[in-house]
Length: 129
Image 1: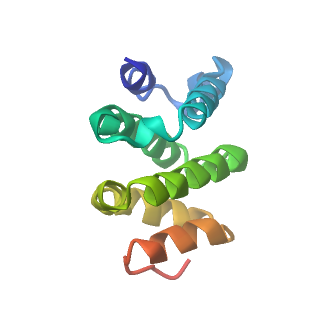
Image 2: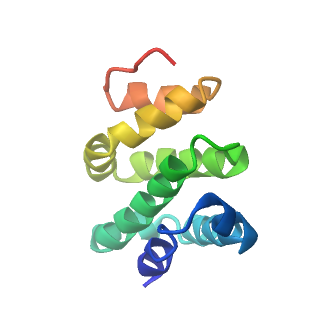
C-alpha cells in the first residue's frame, strides 16, 4: 500500500512535488522503513520493499537536474547499504537491474563517495563521475 502511495506521486513535476511537501512524505516513508529493520528485509516483504525503493530511485531520477535533496539521498544510500547487509543476494540483484538510475545519480552528484562505494560493491562499471 505504501508503495502505491509513493508511485502515485511520480507524475508530479518538481514544482508540484516541492509545493505539496511530497519530498517530506518520501523522507517519512524512508524513516518508517528504517524503523522496520531488519524485518522489512525478509523474503516475504521483498516485492513491497523493492516497489518502494524503485519509487525512491525514480523520484531521484526525475529531479536529479534540480538541486538534489542531499539529506534524502544520503538516507536512501544508508538504507540501501543496510538492505545489502541483510539480504545481499536480493538487494544486489535488484539494484543491478536499476543501475542506470544509480549511475545517473552518480553523474549528477560526483562528490557522493557513498554512492560510488555502492556502485563498486554492486560490481558495476562506474562511469567517471
